[in-house]
Length: 112
Image 1 (cartoon, helix red, strand yellow):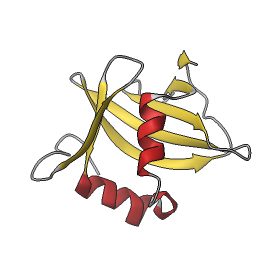
Image 2 (cartoon, rainbow, N blue to C red):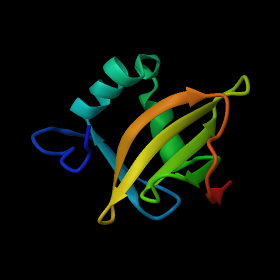
Image 3 (cartoon, helix red, strand yellow):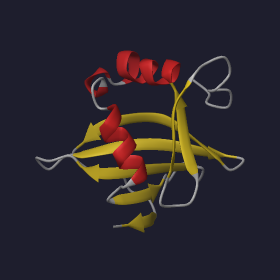
Image 4 (cartoon, helix red, strand yellow):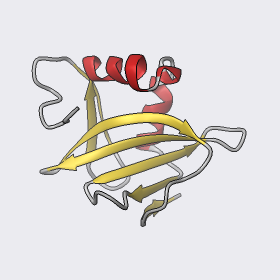
């Protein structure tokens, strides 16, 4: 799913500032897609995703797409919560969010 028109015809669920100086936003409809289709395990984790974006432990740039940033926050038991964003024309959008046991390779942009 392309994120260019993510806000068309939908209510803004959140928009928050990241440590990199840009804001990330998503809509209620897109969040529902993430938690029903992409990663249902994230259904009750909205506050954790927001905390990961605003107060991450580490941010890395995607190796395959320089416009994509991966925000990581310790989620206990040697796991990380990862919030993936894309930045287009200065605007940041949430692509997805999931739990993982390893950080993806990529340039570290920011570290706590």
